[in-house]
Amino acid sequence: MGFFDLFKKNKTQEEQQQEVQVLNEGLQKTKSSVLDKLSHAIVGKSTIDDDVLDNLEEALITSDVGVETTLRIIERIQQRVAKDKYVTTAELNQLLVEETCALLSSSEGTIGSSEGTNGSEAMGSGSTPYVIMVVGVNGVGKTTTIGKLAKQYKDAGKKVYLGAADTFRAAAVEQLCIWGERVGVPVIKQQQGSDPAAVAFDTIQSAVKNNADVVLIDTAGRLHNKINLMNELTKIKSVMQKVVPDAPHDVMLVLDGSTGQNAFEQAKQFTQATQVTSLAITKLDGTAKGGVVIGISDQFRIPVRYIGVGEKVEDLRLFDKEAFVKSVLGI
Image (cartoon, rainbow, N blue to C red; front, side):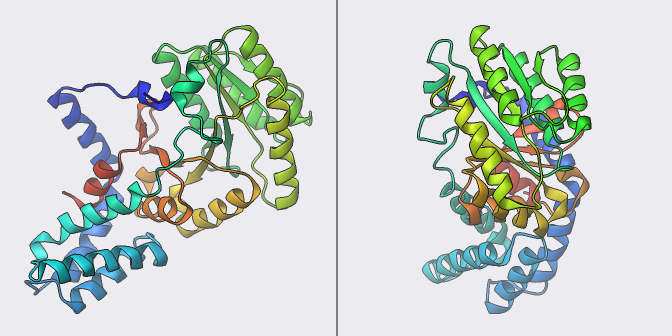
């Protein structure tokens, strides 16, 4: 069992229904938009023909799935239609679910690992904590995501440490400290302008000394100079490894789903600057652009770990690709 599996449990049917309801409510704007576009794609049609596929292509692209991913989905559906000979428009939603999930499955190769170590191995290494370095531009909800994760980890019985390595902005340190107080976990910090790598080193050292299970390191979100970003993140990794040789075990990129195609550009910049191993996509409750989750995961071959569908701590949810796709399509 991997590290992130600790949040999975056998749920009753009632609990499963409640989770589906929360997900549907959180993705309501995206779902309404997609359903409206899909209904226009198949109006007056009984079978899936070229016109339906053209309209479906337009519906997916305008839902921020992205051109490349949309074309892959359309190609998969064309192959299914050709194979099955006769496919009705009533079956289109199920085809979309199956082929989109198959596409997302192929991007799930490195969950919980930057060097091939899975979460269970990291968690089974005695006093060595599981280290997550969190990256992302300012304003995407990075620090809030860290706070919510810390609460969830602590509720799961884990001892958590936070590192305020975004020393560029005083507000980032203050915000993380507020979360630390709220959740009841220690935050390691230094003065504004301090070396972020030094903060990361102190955090890891304190976490090891105190037998912590999980360490979350916040980092600065500046993209004005990719070379500087790359150098800073590389330095943070290097000093972590002086204490925990295989740290970080996960480099989680936080993206704001409401920015649509701009999130693609942020993902591109960060994946070029460092080895990103997982994604957390936030603010999906306030946008009709939830299709961006599918496109980013597919195009960058990086698994989506969490999605944010509301303000509450529990609204940061482990990503379930099938539940997500079904919710977006209203199935």
